[in-house]
Length: 294
Image 1 (cartoon, rainbow, N blue to C red):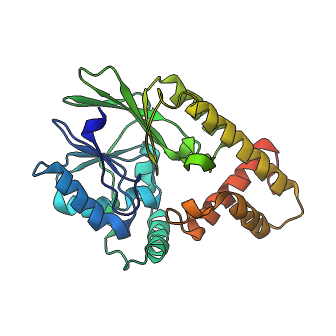
Image 2 (image 1 turned 180 degrees about the vertical axis):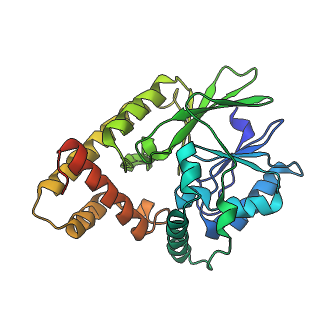
Image 3 (image 1 turned 90 degrees about the vertical axis):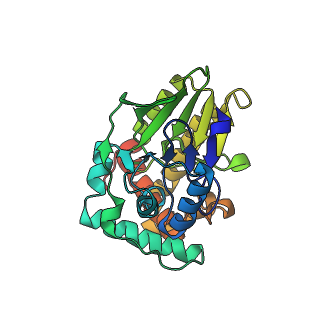
């Protein structure tokens, strides 16, 4: 199965993955500033074949913004996402936020301002929990895994004649940073994130494709899900202490940056994006685990 999977990220590894078969499809599309290179790498890997589908894990800028560059090469491309995610990509305010983050991302990458039109970011079809798409030799099944965002989908991927299954994880699982462990990503729900991680674990996939990282074999790392859950719980504990302190919200975010916004994360996430995400997680911790709305 691994021989059919290609990392075609336009910037750093681990952001966009292509799977080839009777139908060819991508998981996520990366940032706009890297979209042209990502589309070129996809075209090179396809060797004259066409790209048929894109499956989005959620609607954040660094996962959807390469779409325009793919649509220009393959106008018949079909893009799947969750119903809520499709709605997000139709909101003027969300599209404006995506553009702001793309500008920040381009600055971090020392690249020129990305050129695209908002309508090019559209999704074409939606999938809900358990719905599958038959792609000939491949079958892709949507798995609702909220926690990072409300529209998070992971995807269980099976290949005809292959016993192993692959799970493309959304960021609800966290962002794996090797020895540094999993960076927390429960923006809209800590409890729902823990439930989603347990759900992913229960699917029994032998190959785990982690967003912003790559493939991990369960055979080689049998405790990966336990590590994921443990790190999420530790992160919540750190945030609880910050929330209970006398620090302002700005001070809390800066304190959390010292813990979580580490050097390996910098190229993947501008500080503006980190701060926005951390603000959401601190709010989640206040409301959900401490029962406070301040």
